[in-house]
View (spheres, one colour):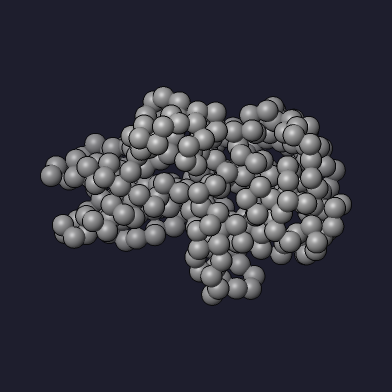
Length: 325
């Protein structure tokens, strides 16, 4: 094992795959000369040159489209968005072309492409730069959606995403790029669609993913002092979703809380709740509780932002609610 920052794990995954496959390249704003807006491609221009680490104009629709066409013609592009908020400019290419071209061409055109970059809030970036898009993209057949929460998962999942023959949305966080963690050395991948039980427990299942899962860890630590045992599942991949891991856990604990950094309406949590009530209703000893952001655009004020985001105290309250405490 070695200790890497989240950004270093991302760079290492991309670099290892590019050394093994000349069809892989990285393209996006500031990925080359500037080493990435968040330094997630540091050193890659020096190693691979400007033909494989490509700076683009501020034109997400344009370079997303170039990537899709390139993938249809035998390459495996990695397209970096400085933030997925900017991906809205290129979302037509992602949904109407990348996600659908395999079906529309009767399988003649695969589209092995990774769109990656940060999602959700990152401090005082206000309404147009703080949106979570996991459920938006997960709503689209043909796309896989991956949201790692730590450096080890980031590296293993990104390597699998790059090798996948379908388009993958790979969502990170500006507030995680400096996070440090142990990462396995040597060849290391994590299959898409497999959740991870980060903490075993018996009293309640907490489901989460991405950076907000840290609040679940804080809550579980405090609840443990009160004799409450929390099982924490990190989805890691939103689509395809590991329903078996979720169902097996709730059948054991009989209670569930879902923590997600997204607006309350039509999100990943609602999809989980549907499947649990459909497949494991008789195992539930309490209604499921989901925790989301407030149903408003993200505020700029740090005081309001703290109220807008769910936190570990909210998780503690939710756990006690399902435990009838």
